[in-house]
Amino acid sequence: FFSSRRRHTRYGTVTGVQTCALPISDQQLFLPWTHQKALQLDCSLVIGARGVGKTAWATALLANHDHQPSAALLRWLFPHPLRTVAGFSDRDHNSHPPTPVFDALMRDQVDPYNIWLAIVLRSLQTGSTPLPKQSWAASASWVGDHLEEAWAMVSQANQVLGAAKSHQLFVFDSLDRVSRDGNWLHVSAAIKALLRLALELKNFKHLHIKVFLRTDQYSRGSFADLPDIAKIRATRVELLWSLIDLHALLWQCLCNGPPSATREAFRTWCLRSSPASLFDSPDAAATPSSPEARWELPIPVQQEESVQRQLFERLAGRRMGSGTRRGVPYTWIVNHLADAQGQATPRSFLTAIRNAAEESIYRFRTAEHPLHYEGLKRGVQVASDRKSTRLNSSHSS
Image (cartoon, rainbow, N blue to C red; front, top):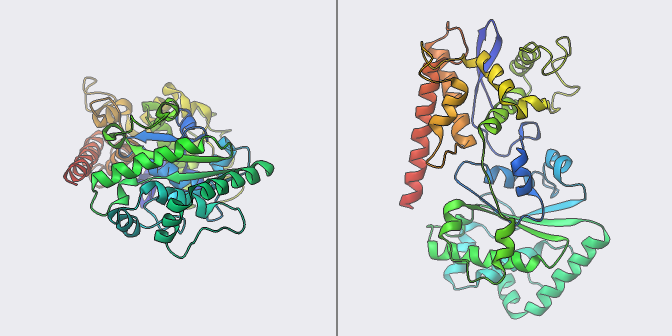
């Protein structure tokens, strides 16, 4: 989240914020309390607009190569042993077919339900199995011809997990990529088949599916005729970010960048911020015991608007201009990034802050605050333009 450019003021050293690159480090994860329900095992469907963090959470659930979620998520949400598997994603995982293979299977009229069930079966830890694994076509074909045996394997795996008091979670994201050219008929059929499988797996206590869908994919899909679809709809969660959540995310990013002198200078600035005792004692060390340790945000910084306002005023001042009628930086950024439903996304917010920092460095180096209001205006403009470009690209596809 940090650029190499630094700006020195009487408030300390403040750096430009960058939009995060996946995978997100354990130190940089910020989980709003409203998102906790989305990541719990009983929630099978998570929906949200572009840029709200669906892929970020999917990646956090698949953080490590040993099939473990991010350590932060384990501490917060999963008291029992949990093995996670990529059911589908935009990344290279051996646990699911890559886009060209999935697309070819769909074009060959292979039932997407059989593909999804084959993905689940190939990741179950059941010892020897009759399921052929020399190709995804062979696995899907076997499933179609041996459904009874396939579900017996699922039941056996559930019993093994139960005996070990463990769980297995299959994570599905970027489902528009099951088709190379975005063919909606194929994408919709694949999503519908996946939701059917998610419903059937709800009968097994230790096996879980979590599907991340864009809001438009969910509203556009024809899922009403799925038996018991209400069971999934009743537990679905929409990812939303409040003003307070976005600012808490910003502080999590700023305080937990890669180990560097810049990060330590910013942490020292935080320790000395008003009120002086907010983060810790003013004399406390600015670094945790390890360079990779997570610097936990104080609860007031995570949840209290008045505290966040005070801190952000130290970075950006109290006004969006010379007078008081043009707005307050703390709220102005989010208000001007919000869509018709009043929602702003982390992607747009962090993009705006990063570009505001760069603009302030180049044009307003001697200004009173590290983030100049003209820089904030420019940052919001850049973020809005990029959002429009992504939406137009999505609509054209």
